[in-house]
Image (tube, rainbow, N blue to C red; front, side):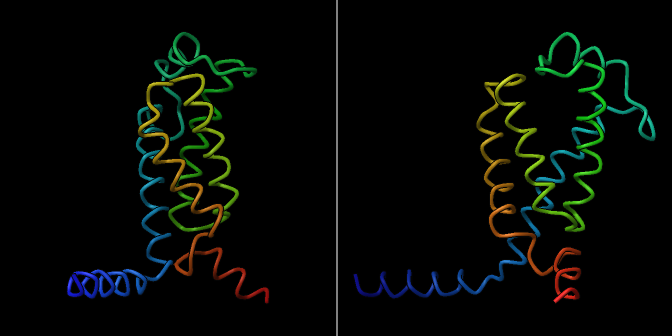
Amino acid sequence: MSALIDWLEAGRRLAERIPYSIVALVARLAVANVFWRSAQTKINGVFEVKDSTFYLFSEKYHVPILPPDVAAYIATYQELVGSVLLVVGLATRLTALAFIGMVAVIQIFVYPSGWPDHILWFALLFLLVARGPGAISLDHLIWRRTK
């Protein structure tokens, strides 16, 4: 039993040496990938929203308050711009909060059965809001220079 405890302790020490910056970078890239790919399904070319996207937002996605065409543009641009911001680590906490809002809308109004994916996205985004983007980010460079 003592050998097992020693082995587990060694594994814990090894895991604790993983820099948070690497964890945050992986979280940022994972979430950015999800939303970037989603945005790609919504556009024809450079920022031209597909007719099928307008159809989905008007007939299938029941986003509250916003008119369907406005919601389609906002969602598409948030996914495109937000993904880039997460990759480079700029305005990371604010971008993650915006994506948390988007995930909440998707979960509640669009795909309630998609919670197994949505909770994973939320967990990664929540980590970024709580702990920030890590040292491998533009946010880190900017904040370091302002101090």
